[in-house]
Image 1: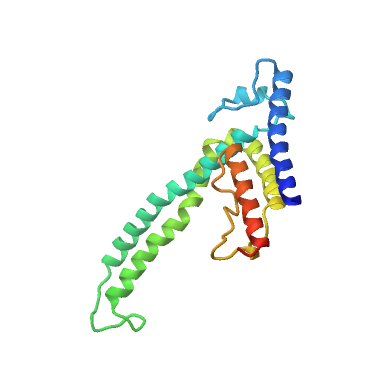
Image 2: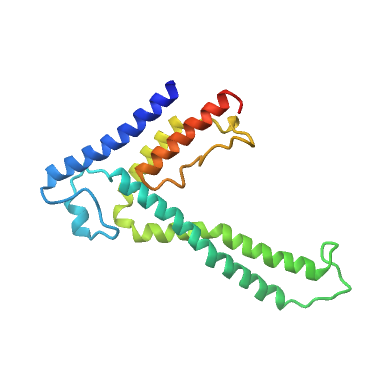
Length: 202
């Protein structure tokens, strides 16, 4: 019961903070809005008062965009890794009579080519995140500020991963699928269900 109340208070505080930020920004700037466009101009950013924070819904939406960009970047990165590995190993001279690491050379080089593709897939999110930050560089400080606050929020709410089981997995540990306040409240409900099942060993 205590965990349910704390989760509800957290969701309420997020919504109140979002509403208060929008109200303060409107009062401080008159016609200026605290909501930034996807690619704001330098003039738009400079017009925002220093105390302005990125609204929660905007931050969560941008956060989901970043994760999507990281995932999308993994596809071409894996492709180029695979092509690069194939181009390199295909040019090597293979002596069928000589084993490589005690295995057939074709098997080793084929596995190494697949490994290059896997490495490209793992490096993809790094390239995607770098490109996304470059596009949204004008509001990066606002995003990082909300990032720290949001991490503290979910850190207080989410339970220990040690309580999860095969039949009761911990839902979205890092909130990567959350892209709005509605999805955040749904995540809180999933956390409450997880805690309830953990208490009764379901």
